Length: 367
Image 1 (cartoon, rainbow, N blue to C red):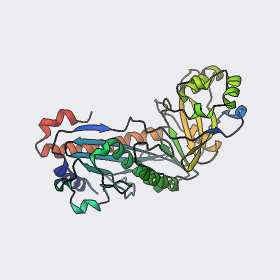
Image 2: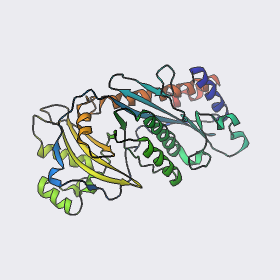
Image 3: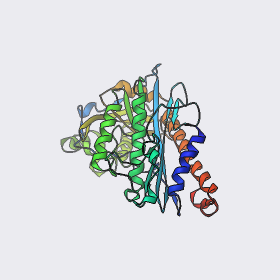
Image 4: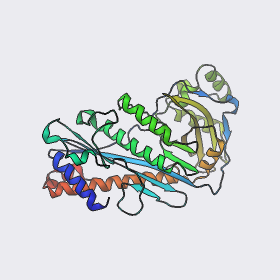
């Protein structure tokens, strides 16, 4: 679909729903990296759980995938927007969806979701939109979307479905790096929707797909795995009490502070076997120095379907951004946000054409 097609689609939606005072909402900085865990446990002897990772520089091709989402909230309902981007080792941008140019990901999933505030005739979409590839009006649970569900639920479902479809499309690459967990905790969705999405995600990921969780300040996976006898042994071996740590990040910072010395080299802790619902995977914690002699590290949680130090070695060899994020993930993240912002600007453009821009411009402008 070209830019003119997007404008036509947005026109039909805005004419129906954007008639009241609305604000902008974004899930980009929400808790997308938290997961539901069931009794995680170390998969090897504690003495072997902390180990050095030798970066593996190879010709292996890899692809990074990330998505972005935003919502416009009006008195007549919610319009949610999502996009996804992919970056590779050889090309900064290998594809985006939705696309305004030639760099397209061949996806056939909605990037727009519309949830009316009232279930009245004036809030019903034109019939052709119900079957449109680009608009979601029903949840995977089978229920029609309504504003009562809130932007968190609508955005979460829209974005996760789109990211999962992108992962499935790119799964034949030697390595697919996903921004976030392999199996995200969809706590805002109905159980029927969660089961369907998790099933789709299980089909999409392969043994060569890794999830990289950047924000571990709210993660407790490592802390929970170090319980019982493992906690006692960990305290004896590393002189750190994991039960006193407020997050996994604190445990790793103490490992770096007290047990690693310059010149710093990459280290990993794990693997931890994790079960979430009917699905299981392995998690490693990666500590990558951003400077050989300064105590500045990138702390990441890496998830995969199998135990593989080779995948860790390959991931460690990928250059890091200034924020301590693998560069292809950082680039895919930025591109996805730009695409979402571009669609949002189309919304603003149409609102201004309707004569609402002067009244609402200061409340909805993209910053």
